[in-house]
Each structure stands twice: as structure tokens, then as C-alpha cells.
Image 1 (cartoon, rainbow, N blue to C red):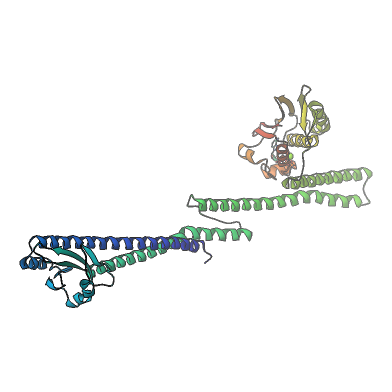
Image 2 (tube, rainbow, N blue to C red):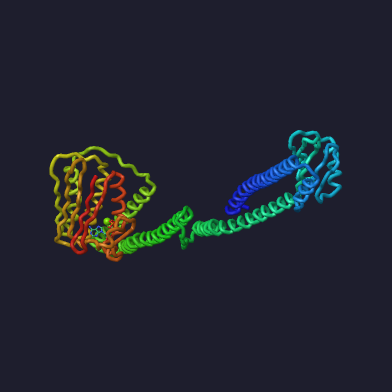
Length: 453
Ligand SMILES: Nc1ncnc2c1ncn2[C@@H]1O[C@H](COP(=O)(O)OP(=O)(O)OP(=O)(O)O)[C@@H](O)[C@H]1O
Ligand SMILES: [Mg+2]
């Protein structure tokens, strides 16, 4: 009984039933009433006709003729005189006349009158038509119409209505079957799909055939399943990358710590190995810091504290900070920033953004190349671009580089030491500032990242 289709069918059933009952009752009553009315007026008209004829040509022959005229199956006639004696009658059963006697003997009417209209219980409906002839004779023409015909019609009508009722029940069952097919089945499939999802099985295939709300719901569940499947594989890839990223420096740390603890090293070797240990530890620290940053961004728990500060001195400081790393790789880092405009941003976050981009430019450029950091102002916005002439990004990969842990040609980036977090952090930070980031790149020729904030 919890099925939606059963509920719908029940409501549908009740509505149809109430409508059916009302309609049938209304029609039944009206059809019968109008039929009875029609018969009564025919009876009155015939009676009046006979009476008129009788009054014009009062004679035994006329009485006989009138009686002969009412020899059909449903109608009968009696003609009486003033005292109630029967002057002429058709084939009507004597007992019916006797039953009518109490009415006929006390009958005093100047006008045509329906004597019996109860068609349900009485065998005839009866009308009386008084006549009075100049020669002094008077009496009644009494007309009878057999109610068997009306009762037969009522029976027929009731049977037809019964057939209509049964047909509507059958239609109702067909509707129920269709409803359960069209509504319940897809719902059951969706329920099974969501159960599979909650158990962690994301291989869900829901076929969306209809364009209605059910189709949309199935589409949404399918999308959810696809997203969860993608997230799951991303998470696995993420964990694999993290373990790889952490295990490489750890291997160095363990190896070099063992070497350093040996007693047979020269002072110079010990310093060299300790430097490697410090370098690797820093790399790990950096990675863990980035991961934490990413986790906090996912929770939206970081805040951007904007303030006004002078643009060019800010970028000059960054240039000073990173320049040595560029010189070490023989790459020229140039800064173009002119004018005295102010920036409205979170200085710490903006520094993080720019350093990340410069870090990429450094990592993915060859020696002897050039990297340009260009800052300009356009109306209310500041445009910051980092242009390198390094290895570039293949066109088919460009849409994905801002995704977490995405690296172009994984082996290539790993060789460069990246973990695929930098740009996703940059994007989140830029968006938190209400800005945008764009990239133009040609494989083998270089890339330009442009931020507008
Ligand atoms: N300037 C660039 N030139 C060429 N490829 C780039 C450049 N910047 C980013 N990429 C590609 O985009 C990928 C994603 O960059 P992202 O900065 O997010 O990660 P990463 O540099 O690999 O690691 P990290 O988290 O240490 O920054 C990189 O792996 C690299 O392949
Ligand atoms: Mg990077």
C-alpha cells in the first residue's frame, strides 16, 4: 500500500467512483423521469382525443371504435357512464378495474386528470377524461398505459449503466498497470541506484527515456553517480600521489640520515648530506603546507582580508624574493610595473598567487629563457600576467590544469617535482578575491597566465 502507484490509483479510483455514481444517478433519474413524462402526456393527449370524438359523435358505434383503436399492447381504455357502469372496454384485466374501483366510484372531476402515476408499483398509469353530451349522457374516458414498458426500459437502462460501471473499473485497472509501469518502475530503479551509491558502489547506469520530472530526477542521480565515481578515482589518485610525494623525500631523509650518522665522513661530506636533508625536509614541509591549504579551501574556512597597498613596490619585493632561484637556473625574470596605483587585495594571498605562477614559469622553462611579470591597470581592475617561453601546455590539457592534483603528462611533472596543487590553490584564491584567471599556451612555445582582480 506504500506504492505511489497504488496511492495514485486509489485517489483516481475514488474520484472516478464518486463522479460515476453522481453521473449515473443523475442520468438514470433524468432519463426515466422524462420517459414517464412523455408517456403521461401521450396518454393525456390520446384520452382527450377520444373524449372529443365521443362528445361530437356520441353513439355505441363510436364507443366501439374508440375501444378498437386502443387494442395495442401497452394501452387500454374504458368508457364509463355517470354511475360508473362500463359502456365499453378494451382487453384490460378485470382485476385491474376492480382495484381501481374505489378511485372510479368517488371520481368527480371536470378536467382531464392523472389518476395513477406510480409506475413503480402499479401495473398501469391511469388518466381520466370527463365527457358530457348535449343529450344528457356523461361519464369518463379512462386511459391506461402499461408500466411494464417503463419498467423494462428502466431495467435496460440499469443494465447499461452496470456495463458502464464495470468498464470504468477495467479502465481503472489498466490505468493502475500503466501507472505502476510509468511511475513506479523508474522510481524503484532510482531507489536501487541510490542504495548502491550509499553502499559506495558508484557504477550506476540509469537510462533516461522521458523528459518529465522523473527523467530529470534520473538524470540528476546519474550525474551524482558520475561525479562520485570521478571524485573517488580523484581521491585514489590523490592518495597515490601524496604517498609518492611523501615517500620520495622520506627515502632520501632516511638514507642520508643513516649516512650522516656514520663516523667515517669528512666534514665537507657531512655538510653536503645535511644540506640535502634540509632541502628534502623543506620540500616535504612545503607539500604538507599546500595540502593543508587545499583542505582548508575545500571547507571554505579561509578568509580574504583585503586592504589598499601600493602595487609596484609589492611586486618589486616579490621580484627580489624569487630572483635568486631564477638566476640559479639562468633564467631572466623581468618585472614591468609602472605608475603609482593602489591595489585592493589580501597582500599575503596575492603574494602566494604570484609566487605560485612564477614557480611554475621557473619549473616549466628551459635555461637561458625569459620570464616576464607584467602588471597594469585597466579601469578599476588590475591585470597581472606571468609570461614564459617554456615547454607550454598541450591544448587538450589546458582545461584541466586548474583541477586539484592535475598534472600535464604525469611523468613529466613529477620529473619537475610538482604535485599538481599550485594552480588549484591559485584559482581558489583568485576567485575568493572576486577575480578571474586565464591561460594562453602553446605546446613547446610557452604560456601566459593572466589574472584580473
Ligand atoms: N607555466 C607553465 N608551463 C607549462 N606547464 C605548466 C605551467 N604551469 C603549469 N603547468 C602544468 O600544469 C600542471 C599543474 O600545475 P600546478 O602548479 O597546479 O602543479 P605543479 O606545478 O605540478 O605542482 P605544485 O603543486 O608544486 O605547483 C603542472 O603539472 C604543469 O604540467
Ligand atoms: Mg606549480
